[in-house]
Image (cartoon, rainbow, N blue to C red; front, side, top):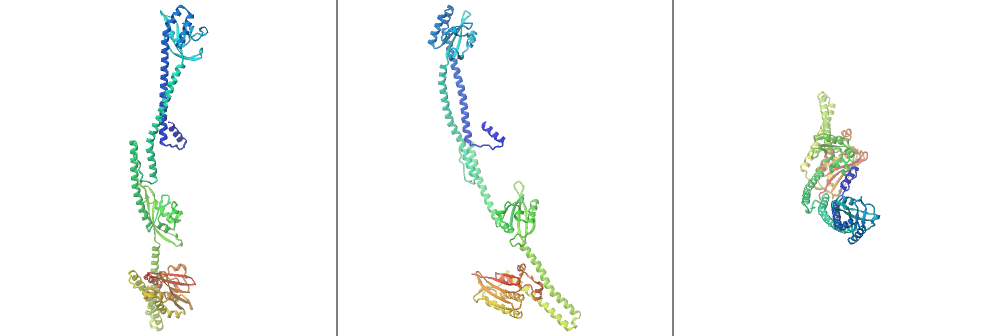
Length: 610
């Protein structure tokens, strides 16, 4: 009750309840119950014994009174007060009992312990009143005469229907108290012995009840700590044993289910981490729950730092944030596209996103799954295709328009004027040659691409010096006309797996551009050097150079940095594109380093097979 009241008091005050071990709840309560039972039984026993002792002593006194009543009556009849007093003293001394004779009016006639003349009237004494009424009423009280506690029993002295007086017998209670003290000591020692035995039994019972529960508690703690191999010993009462078996079964099932969950989680994590697409999961508050490595790379974020942050704060892209918001609001899967400058280079990237809600077991929306694909290359290829269509249309339209126009002019009468006719025919021939060059370059580019895809281009391990020298000799007439000097730096021992005709064509295209865009008196240097894993062929000039924004696009078909100058110089716009594909056909690549006004360096990287 005290623990219940205490816990209830704590709950009312808002104070957390104090939890105690089960042993200290069972053991003290059993001891208290045992102690309460012992106290109650002892009190009842002592009261019964005390009552029994008093009743027995009262009967004894009454029997003594009847034994001496006849002698007392003789003295009363003869009115021998002195003899009565002497008899009372002698009888009281022999029986250790106080005898008192009282007249019907309450006057004391004789007493074995005191002078009757000095004693007060006893008519109001309860035992006297009861005796005169024909009853026996033992009385326990303190005697003012003797200054001690006494037990009084009185009987009436009747003869022939007349009451001649009252005989009262009294004994000190000290004897009764001594006898009761002995009994009390025995009862107390007996209670202490019983209490000790009860304490041992209660301790044993409490331990028997609490120990299995403590073991279960330790087992559950190990279970919550992840030790699913633990097993609780089945012992104790049937209820405890059943509970232990249930916990062991639960641990086995949890172990099996968690192993399954861990395996599935590992598989999902492996799939999640290995996906090429970027995957982001967010909660209903648009906070990032997880992001895979591909998504972190696409969005240029750190997965560990952005977990728990808002998608807008983590990525700082309002288009993506709006897409996430729409995905959470829309019940059906959602698709969309957005762009952003998320990379370190600041270039704009394009992303295609697919979003869908996430639901829990109750069918409630818990967040959204966003799958992101980088379509930047696709968009750039589409832009290149559009530019190619526009450029090839422009490149073809110019000569065709010229041919068509001058042909109409000739038909309209210019044939009758020989000088104009000849000039127009030369222009038509020049534009036809330009068309022929464009078609030849397109065919050459197509052949290189097709051969590279089908792996039909034959490569042989040959020295580079002869191929480079042949390309320089081919371009020498044009270089001489432009007053440009071309030098070669290539050791005879440098060899690579090449197709001589294609590599020579690539070097010729690079030299042709270098000659066109270098001023008179310029110097062009062709060099080849061996580096770890590759051979690098460089064509360096000190011409006009290329702006940074054009460097990435100069290898596109028909792309011109300076359209007016390129058209004037007569290029087809396909030379560098052919170089790029020839390098790819050799399983290598081409690179360029250039600064406006400082010239350019084009490098062909040809791999070496060990």
